[in-house]
Structures are given as C-alpha cells and as structure tokens.
Image (tube, rainbow, N blue to C red; front, side, top):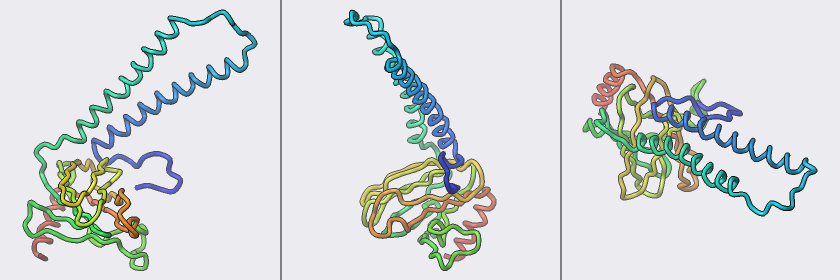
Amino acid sequence: MAHPSQLGFQDAASPVMEELLHFHDHALMIVFLISTLVLYIIVAMVSTKLTNMYILDSQEIEIIWTILPAVILILIALPSLRILYLMDEITNPHLTVKAIGHQWYWSYEYTDYQEIAFDSYMVPTQDLAPGQFRLLEVDHRMVVPTEAPIRVLVTAEDVLHSWAVPALGVKMDAVPGRLNQTAFIAARPGVFYGQCSEICGANHSFMPIVVEAVPLNFFQDWSTLMLEDA
C-alpha cells in the first residue's frame, strides 16, 4: 500500500514485481554512475587552467566512448528482456478471471465457475467504514488464492481502460472487442489496490481495483458462498 510522500515503489507482492524492483535498482545504479562520471568530467574541465590546442583527435577515446555505451546498453537490455519474458509467460493457470472495464466501474467473471460474476463499484466517501481508503475501496473485491498462477483476461465494453495493480506488477490495456491477458502469482495474503491507468472519461479517477489474496481454503469458502448466493 502506498503512503504519503512515498518516493519508491510499493512493496512487491508477486515474483514479477520483485524482479522489477531488482531491475529498477540495477538500472538506477548504472544511471547514478554515469551521472557521477559526467559531473566529474564537467567539473574537471571547468576548473582546469590547462588547455591543449594541439590534440585534434584521439583514437583511444573514440574507441572507449563507442564500446562503453554498447556494454552499458547490453547490461540494461539483458535483464529487461528476461523480465519481459516472465511477464508474458502464462503456463498452466490455476484460475482464470475475466476483468471487464466499463464507464466507470469494473466487472469480474470467474470463468472456471459458471455462476460467479459481479460488478465492482467504488465505495462513496460517505459510506466508507473506519480504516478504509478514500477513492480506493470497492463494494466487491476480486478474490484470488495465494501462491497460485492467476490468469486475468482483460477487455472493455465501451472505451479504452487499463487494469493495473502496482504491488502485483500487472498492467494490461482493456480494449473494446479485444481480449488481452496477463498473469500474476500473489506471493502473500493481503489486499492490493490499483486503478484504471488509461484516461477513459469524466470519472476515470473513480474506478479503483482491489485484489484480495487469501489462502486456498479461504478462497474455496468464498467461492462456495458466492455460488450459494448466485
């Protein structure tokens, strides 16, 4: 869960998000080293009183500033490509949930269960219970089991939306007439918040996403209760 004045990412709740955090630290360290080197060169050139007017070119320097950037780009590209593969890999999902974007709410269909389908609206500020978060709570949460591959099929009924939950490391565009898919594994129980990440109209900021990850036995109890209420 994000907090005021937070500068970094939310705590990772999935293996992919853990990899994204590690890659962020890796890339940030490279950027820091490059920035430090450039700043040192600028300070050295400004502060020096020596000027060599007879050097027209330097083969050694040209080789260095050609090869070194290529090596740096490779060091960034290799882990990035690995994470892209991990984010697109969907093998043997234990549960499939269809998320449908509307103006301005989400609806969910558990395709493994014929009767589990519900709409998820934002809870108005005046109806919030103590401890709940303004503009983030919904009346029906998307409930999934922990430590199980979950596939999410994402589409939209009217305009472009985007289904995104930062702590789980997932973001997928919801396009009318098209079915996109993403996947995640909730590594721990918890409640994870997200929002529509594609400007979709006047109430774009008022269609939050809430994913509740629970142990498998609790999920079985929840699904049984939902089937009984259907």
